[in-house]
Length: 121
Image 1 (cartoon, rainbow, N blue to C red):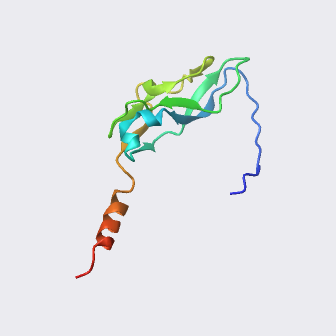
Image 2: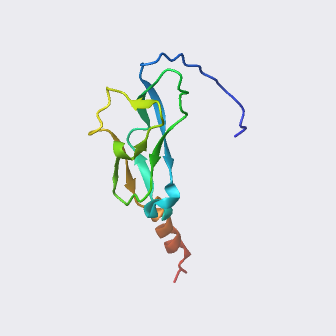
Image 3: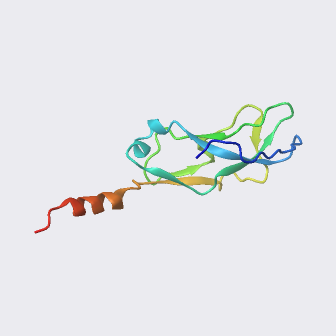
């Protein structure tokens, strides 16, 4: 990774026009499930929003991860919209899913290393 600018795309935005903004996870350290190696399996990575005239377009919409548990389904009520940004009319608040919380990613890797570390008889 060289951290150099490869491509820059510009977007002409008209007020009232829906735009897809990426979802950013916040407060992951306040979730016991994520601290123990759990992860969020994303279903939707973007939210269609309308930004009011004169309000800067945010780089991301925050999803609060405080107190999420394993097997929780993350829905619209956890998303924090900045001032001047609203949900697009095309998105249904009741059926929109962000993702699901699953257990540790490395369960299979841990079992393999334990088996390999046992001395051969």
